[in-house]
Image (cartoon, rainbow, N blue to C red; front, side, top):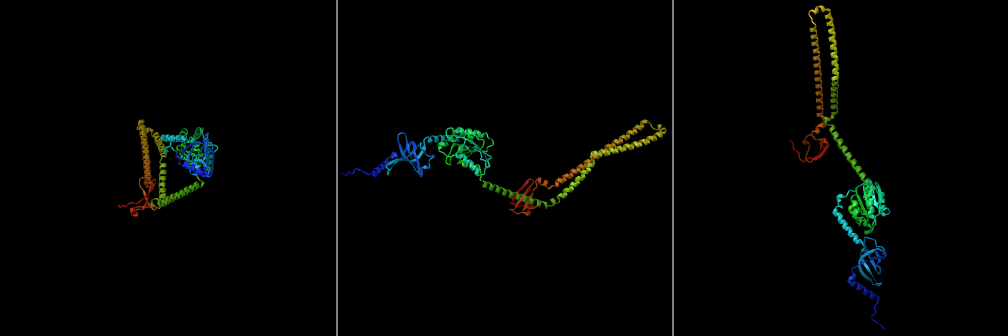
Length: 468
């Protein structure tokens, strides 16, 4: 007997599909559980979400994966938001996930935002506290895991580029509850090294929970006290931690941090080559300008015979000096001593002669000459000698003063004739195309001129010419 109440399997599954589609409660379900039987097929994730008593199939398609901050795996507790749908062909149903996060990440992220806001208000993120990153550091400290991709990436990047810096490694735990304390320990060790020019702190990529140790408040405050510039290199480019905001510079990856502190060899060689070329051109220009300036000055009448003039003046001064040496007090004193000695000797000779004559005529003179008169005559002659000696000293001193005044006068005239001293008094020399300008008739408006001062030169354009 035929019964029209029977339906096909496809019809039943289609009916259930429509029922699920019409049920508003199944269009946005908030579900919590543990991942099981996780697998990836092409760009899509397929897994189950279970609790102690039940489980449901789940799928996460490629276009929703971009929002994930972690890689799902079996045993991981998650929270998902999605739509429950029936798969008509197989008569099964599953939750199609649009969002998924690890359980606890929401609370961690909230704590992260609160700490970030707190430290920002205290000024720990202010640019004025960030130290400039050295372009060519001598010693670079590194804090990261001893066995990890981060340290390998940093070292290989330094070696592949221009390895000028010495690397000092401070290994530390970079994941888990003990990580913040161990990172602070490594920082304390690094701070004791006075040779460090810059410090890299970080690790490779991971989930938000894996990177959360870099959101520790004590670690952030310790980093803020760094005596040298610091670079945060935590996770990938899209990952942000509190350390990123406190450090002097945030690198997207550990490799990026190493690249910030190194240069490409060819670029450095090119920079040095450009500097060398610019230096050579600059020196050539300066030497050329100075040579032209010297050449121009050397042809002027004042300087053309400058050496000859100076030589003549020098010879005059030298002659005066030799003449003055002959009139030194020592030489004059010796000469006076000799003259006085000769005078005394002459006086004695005359005195002896007169004395002998006196003795021969003693009898004749005794009545005419008394002893007191003879002594007075001797004293008078002695006073004459003393007066003559004093006048001689005065004449010599006057002669010395006269020669000194004359020498000083000649020195002053030589100083006034020095063209460099004239410029120092405020005068200047004007050049046009390396030629000296003597009057305004040689200039016209918009001419480029050089003005020579005692301590340098200035360049100017002629705006206006007024003739007097």
